[in-house]
Amino acid sequence: MRQIQFREALREAMTEEMRRDASVFLMGEEVAEYNGAYKVSQGMLDEFGPDRVIDTPIAELGFAGIGVGAAMNGLRPIIEFMTFNFSLVAIDQVINSAAKTLSMSGGQYGCPIVFRGPTGNAGQLGAQHSQNFENWFANTPGLKVVVPADPYDAKGLLKSSIRDSDPVIFMESEVMYGDKGEVPESEYLLPLGQAHVAREGKDVTLVSFGKMMKVAHSAADELQKEGIAAEVINLRSVRPVDYATIINSVKKTNRLVVVEEAWPLSSIATDIAFNVQRHAFDYLDAPVLRVNSMDVPLAYAPTLIEATLPNVKRTLEAVKSVIYRK
Image (tube, rainbow, N blue to C red):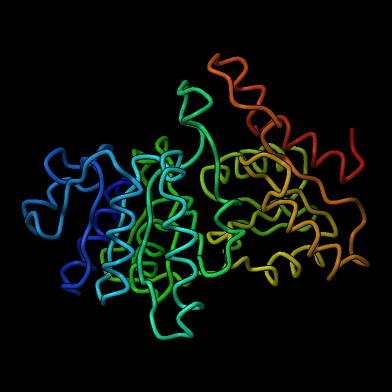
């Protein structure tokens, strides 16, 4: 099977859906003439023209609102935020318009829109450009929140998101755009809200999503060297969350560690821990542990970034704790 970059998988998904459906268009900062801030939309302006690949001013609230209005009137916009840190400027449109339209109209108006772009830390970008808001958006009824972990996820999940009738928050990572992975040439779709058991094991369940799956896989590799078989679950969606897959795994391994880049309070990991203790309490042989970012704004210094973010060392320590091994 061919290998392509994460950015190429996203581009293929958008291009294929725009060819298939004339109501789909892309709008955002630098998506057209500059080929995208991260070259995700490279070449799309040449194929689809300025009416369907639209450059915007630096005005997230404005172009997010235009996208919501377009979606309510029968189009299927893809709104690119250069980073989800900037989505806070547009959060009123995302939360109070896109997410609530269907409910407030009594089902008369939908809002099939995708808001996509990078989330989380991407190096020395400072506290205001290194935040994770997956759990913020996942807190909102009416939204679906998708976080792909590799190029295969990226293409299959984005195509499903574009076709979905609900507003979808599609959160990527700057540091993953160059990652390569196997992606079929034939069309495929990945269902939203269905987790993937990326690696089977019997001793502990590791749950993660997005670029933190790299941490989970690396930790599982290290554990394997010590004879510890970790089952690794890639959530893919954090709203809805596939609790059934997690709970079935915990019933087998009896232990759970959740790795998530967001801050610990009100995190996705917190919600998973609650649901596991509610539905699989009698199967747990140890408390559920979370590996989150430290509860501080992210610093600029590389040493402090390393100390703040989830990493393999902290994940291994959590696993050793739940299996009662030093």
